[in-house]
Length: 475
Image (cartoon, rainbow, N blue to C red; front, side, top):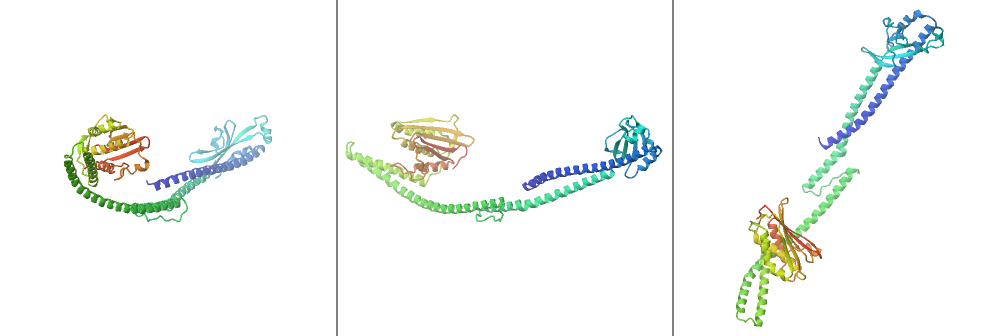
């Protein structure tokens, strides 16, 4: 059963319940009125018979009583009888009832065999005409019982019930069909139009609109939908424009990257030759020769230039990871050993918090070691003036399937306007360096199927989180 059918059934059920209760109440009222009419008619006839009986008795025409009772019987009157207060029949239209005892009852419809009857019993009071014969007797001296067929009354009631049920069924069918038609034209049809519009939008047509002249809720919904589609169309146009701009930038960056890689490759070998030649020249100078210090400075600059060239090559043409299954903590320990001397010079304390249950993961140890080294060197650089503390923690989340290495420093933090740029190539706040360290690290981690997240508060410190997959091998 779909939503439309459920809606029609629910509304129809509620309305028909109300109509049914109302009709039942009206039927009960009409039934009571018809029964009251039948009883009233019976009471009226019984009063007439009572008056006739009283006349016969006061005129002392007692011998006429049996004939009187018989003449009263007709299609409207079933039986007439005169009873004492104890129910003993002393006169009746049916002579066989004389001497029998009947119950003294309140007026009601009773059934004798298959014939329903209005049974009326009227008291005969000991009034002035009766006192001549019944002096000193109780106020009620006898009961007059009149039975009138109630078949016509019950047939009218039954006919009324059948008509009410038929009316109820017709109303039910009419209401159901009307609700179905109203639902189709007022709800289902416009909603289907909205669904078709959304389907076209899902297929990529943002120019489609749902047009309606209605001013109700459906009209408001259509207006909101069209406004949303207009904004989506506008946004998509802006995104396409931005995408084209970004693609142009990417193409330019790719060209620049290839050019930079080619230049870096051409520079790398001559740099090695220059460094070797200067080292040969340096052997001709004594240690106290002033020119020796200049040569050492030149060698340091050549070394820095060589590192920059290597970073540029690594970023422009990153090598594919060589995945092996290994523990991650020993990689961190090797990096800590490499920078331990410099950390002691800068008064930086390093605390490691390895996970209790270590797990092996698929990584390229050398590449991941370089990632950790880049992050730690940046953290140490931020704490170079006053020292501080660097906490390195590892954890393994089986639900997310990721290993996490967290680097938390107590440095000055990264300003918010710089935070979104730190992974962009060539972005740096240092006087030295190429600004490629974090960009290379991000690319490396992503090639491993992971990601790098950073959080920082100025004056509090910075936290780098490196997430690497536990089970899936990438490469």
